[in-house]
Amino acid sequence: MKSSLKKKKLTLHRFSLSFSEPGDRSIFETYNKDFTSWLSSMKLPGELISNLGDIYIPLINLLKQEKYIHKGKIPIIGISGSQGSGKSTFTALLTNLFEKAYGYRVASFSIDDFYHSR
Image (tube, rainbow, N blue to C red; front, side, top):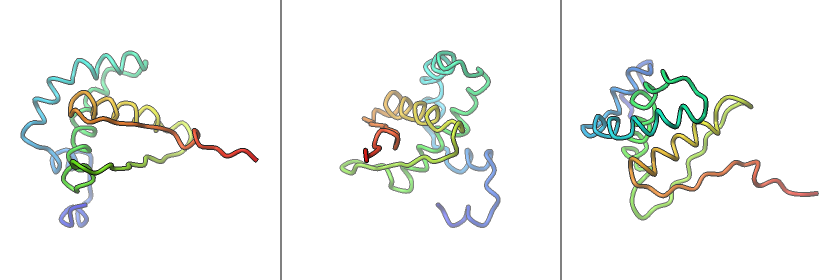
């Protein structure tokens, strides 16, 4: 993460401002309808639409800025959290945004898919 941000308390507002890019508004406007539909299909509250501009788009910008995502490389992004914390929901939304708004191909899976038998 940028060293200038390490010294400051990173609030959600500061995060979204720190990792915003000029084309973000266009992405938000284009993807807004899909995101709203996705929230509805997942039976999530519509007010979570603000997360699109506050969390998801800035997170993708951060990953691009920090060179985790660039052409010719296959990034692996891990998401961890306690049971029921929303990891699968977060991953599904992020996958959808990466594919539809940014044109990336994404494969997502759960560690639960890789249990070993005795």
